[in-house]
Image 1 (cartoon, rainbow, N blue to C red):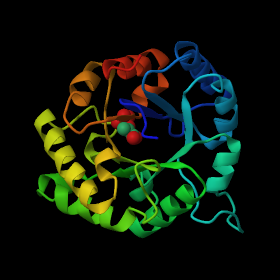
Image 2 (image 1 turned 90 degrees about the vertical axis):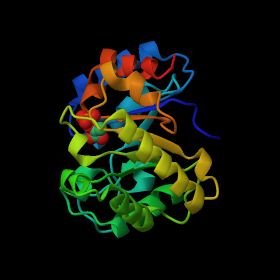
Image 3 (image 1 turned 60 degrees about the vertical axis):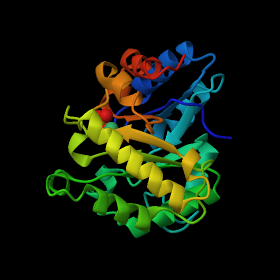
Length: 250
Ligand code: PEP
């Protein structure tokens, strides 16, 4: 079943010892007895199971931030998609720029991880986006096409995939593209997905990069923006909730 719009996901990254993570999850759970749209959090793996239990009475979706491309094996320190699922995850973020650029993950590896995650029954939040250098050189669409070519797994469909367009230069910087640019990129991405996937027209398409309560409404009002992936601002329950309601969620 397609996710209700807006889709608002919070990537906690490497933030959250138990006490803080559970307090944040508890605060969101108190606001979320019933949800008209889709709200999700992606905590560190160490607290994922406890966060999932803390929000179990709500419709809040819990996901992991990465997974291995094999279901199990001799891979010290890694976590597989079935392990995330077993811990209570319903989704996983893959191809985040902090992994593509910080850990050298290739499109091909991201694709294998995405295939493994979908096989395990997880929703994949597949991140793509150009660097500032590529943006300034006018290479945005070339880069996004390459990332889609290389990292979209063949087993993906609207029920198992959400795409997050995250310009690398907008992540954690307080800078966002002009609304017109977001509109243009998302229209282009929708067209691409419609050609690449059987149900591309229904695939969730998010914007990510310096989303805050103050800019969330105008971003989510753009055509083809189904929601947002939020980093820093998702660590504050009140701010994150205001982003969710700014998009029409209640
Ligand atoms: C992110 O890391 O996915 C992100 C969007 O971060 P921020 O909102 O902090 O820019």
